[in-house]
Length: 112
Length: 114
Image (cartoon, rainbow over all chains, first blue to last red; front, side, top):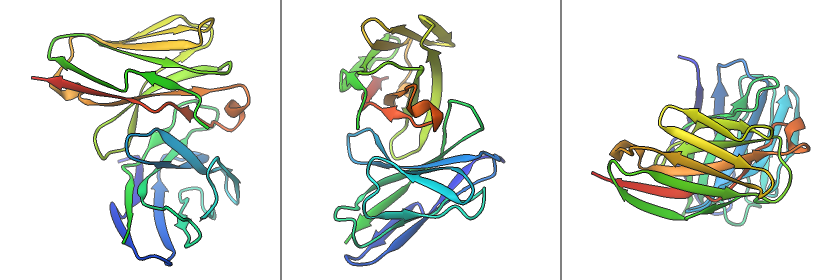
């Protein structure tokens, strides 16, 4: 099956810890995106990557980091510098010059 | 930054009724898209309308776009309980389009009662 997978589905973090959220796609899409969603809110862009080994900050990049070493993978690290990390995190990908984004199922991160 | 504002924030209707959601945006767009999100899940693309289009249909969905008013509406006809979800509009501007960035509204939560 083609698609985007995110893991884990639920993640619990203690204050002061870094955690990494996984995002993998087998759609052969060039561009990948990370969004944060807070309850009752829309999506806000954290980071995006249009090509391997290159990525750009989105609107709320502070306290987050990413890497794009492989086309299929775009992991997001939530660092201890992120003051309010509890949220639902969504990864998406986009093909070439297409306009539509395809989303993964999301990871719900809770800080204990 | 949020470009779109959606109205209403929440909508509750009976099965079989039509549901209309509205989206307003601030800056000129290349296209506007509607996505659906079931509770606790990822988003699913529903329909895309380009700036030079006024109306588009897909099954029970009808989208209109009024660029002079910077607004769009999504109509779901003959709603079903399975349509219960949150619906988001997302815009692509001339600037954001170079990177494929979507700018999302805050969404409308639709409940369809059986």
